[in-house]
Image (cartoon, rainbow, N blue to C red; front, top):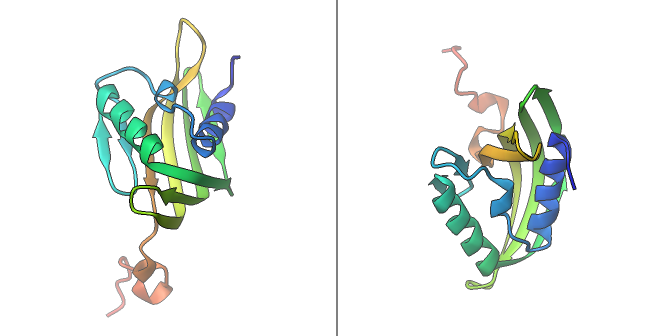
Amino acid sequence: MRRDAAETVTAYYDALRNGETLSSFFTESPDIIKVGLSERLVGYADVADGLSEQTATTDSWSIESHDLSVTVDDDIAWFGDQVSMEWTDIQMDTDYRFETRWTGLLKRREESEEWQFVSLHVSTPNEELQHAEDDLFSWDG
């Protein structure tokens, strides 16, 4: 089934929720990058290994998209989203919940017209910097 760029992002969320293989969403290139909450993976082999490990050691994923925005320009698309994430680390028997920010870049493959990630970044805001008085860029003395 051929998906557009936005459908590819939401399909990735669905696959994550369902514990499915995630590496097929990424371009098989040594130049791709995936930055998660606790890792930085460079190259398809590292990304695929990291995602496989994540799938094997986690369960009960909840992914809730709040503000998905996707822009397409020919064969390139970029997106941003605010996502509530929850999961269980089955090795540590620990539940996690984060409010996260996602950004990424997708490229349409010529041969199949499928969209795949070439870059994906997931971060969470630092609680200490969430208030106006903590603005790092305030120049008031």
